[in-house]
Length: 347
Ligand SMILES: NC(=O)c1ccc[n+]([C@@H]2O[C@H](COP(=O)([O-])OP(=O)(O)OC[C@H]3O[C@@H](n4cnc5c(N)ncnc54)[C@H](OP(=O)(O)O)[C@@H]3O)[C@@H](O)[C@H]2O)c1
Image (cartoon, rainbow, N blue to C red; front, side, top):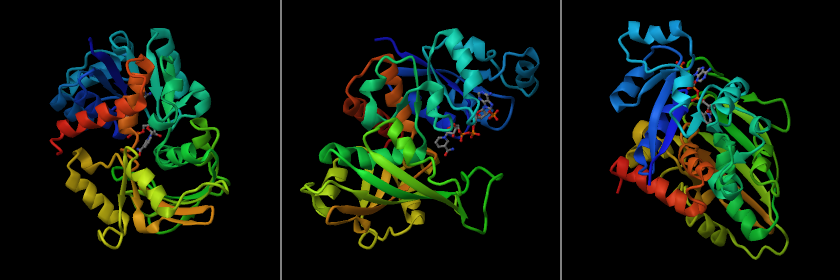
């Protein structure tokens, strides 16, 4: 079978990770990545052997790469001529103009969570709506927070048949590589209430009733979600049976804060570095076992999200959905995760 040709438009925090994850797969290949101009990320593309293109088609911008000693294969239009699907990893809110380019090049497209659902009219997470995205011309992989919520809430919803959720997103204020954001010594509530994070889950699973509040805190390594979910009266579940569901859910890690001595996001990230993926990434959602409790029909739990990386394997499954090459989301997840493990020699 021929490989799916994947272009990555924007080779920043998300783009470089998606490129690596595509490179790890047997059924797809990185046909090219884009940068606005020559800067430190170009070195990585060269080292990995990913053909480098410019986000613009202007000759002047393309020539700048050459002036700094990088081989630039052309502009975005040249790249779009070569690919089957483009993963848009540009900074949020550039979607509208990029979408026009993808449509006129007649390629499939995947946007990220920085764009609104309305841009594509379709959103994606592996566990919630893979089938709905099968053979679609384009979609949006939801944000890191929405991906995290969907990993633990969707399997719960599927078992219970109804779910009412209130959650507070305790958000890191910036990515570790971002020096432009804050706060650095304050807690900043998002005053637009409810926040957009929770309701975004309904773009991939409209049946889950969910609202959220959000605060930004001075940390760069992870988000934490504090979740209260109301199950139907006749749920028949216990704290242990819910933990068992999540233990058998792909891309969810359950550990005990006290026994495993992993009580804060600092230890979670240290554990992630031990796993051995590049950049110390943690694709899985981390749930503290001893922070889960079902009281009557109300479930309380905390989970931690590695914001730069939980969406990465979802982009790979999403490529297979759009290209119609794997209709079973669980098979795709298995294929994706095994290939990434082999790529990084993780046992
Ligand atoms: N960072 C996260 O934790 C995170 C998590 C989940 C989802 N997302 C979403 O993922 C998307 C990308 O975010 P990011 O954090 O990776 O951003 P980023 O680190 O700022 O990287 C953006 C990349 O896009 C390139 N770019 C700039 N203008 C462009 C254009 N017009 N067309 C195409 N590419 C362009 C930039 O080029 P240069 O390198 O040349 O400047 C850069 O390589 C956003 O929608 C964001 O909301 C981010």
